[in-house]
Structures are given as structure tokens and as C-alpha cells.
Amino acid sequence: QVQLVESGGGLVQPGGSLRLSCAASGSIFSMYPMGWYRQAPGKQRELVAHITTFGTTNYADSVKGRFTISRDNAKKTVYLQMNSLKPEDTAVYYCWESIRGDDYWGQGTQVTVSS
Image (cartoon, rainbow, N blue to C red; front, side, top):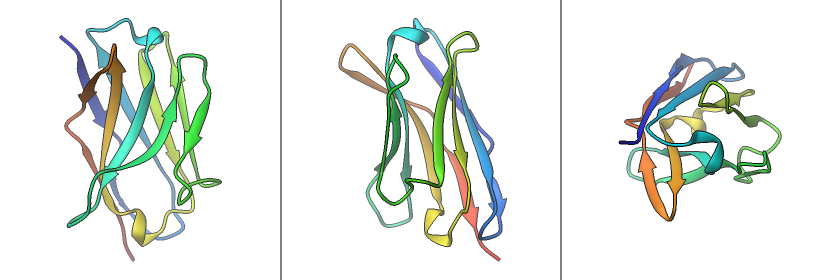
């Protein structure tokens, strides 16, 4: 059974940084693409960043140059380094894994950017 557990969220001031982690279990981690999505209150869930099994990345335009996604296959963990955070980055952030066309999600971690 696939499980994704996020950590690292919290409250940060504008311009600050946070690093999210997502620990995966129950799958051959290195074989599947991973990613991060976010959902702000009253809005649809949106893509933040993806990373393929080969390490190719893509980002939402709103986070390019500020966020970096990475993965450690040995630790079965995917990370999201978030720098220069803005109030509009406030949302629940979800880890995502795609396995043979099926989507798996973590429980989410809250990120709040506020002074």
C-alpha cells in the first residue's frame, strides 16, 4: 500500500524559506514521477512542481526561480525547497506520486506566509 507523508510546513514571514519533505513507502520509489501540488482556500488544487524518475523537473510559472524540487531515491523522499516566499504561496501543500496511471496523495501540510 502506497503511503506519502509530508512534513516541514509552518508559518513563515514573507521573503522567508521552508523545506518540505515527503517520505514514500509501498512503491518502488525510484521508478515513478513525483510532485507537489497546493490548494489555497476557495481555489482548486494546482501543480507546483514535478520531477521525473530521471530528475527532469518542471515548475508552475508562479514559483519558477524560487522553488526547487529534488528527490533522494535511496531515502525514498522528495523535497521542495521554497525560497522568497510570498503571502500568495499560502496553501496546503500535497505530495503526489503517479504509479501506472494511478494518482496517490499525501495528507497535506499547511504553509502560511504572513507577517
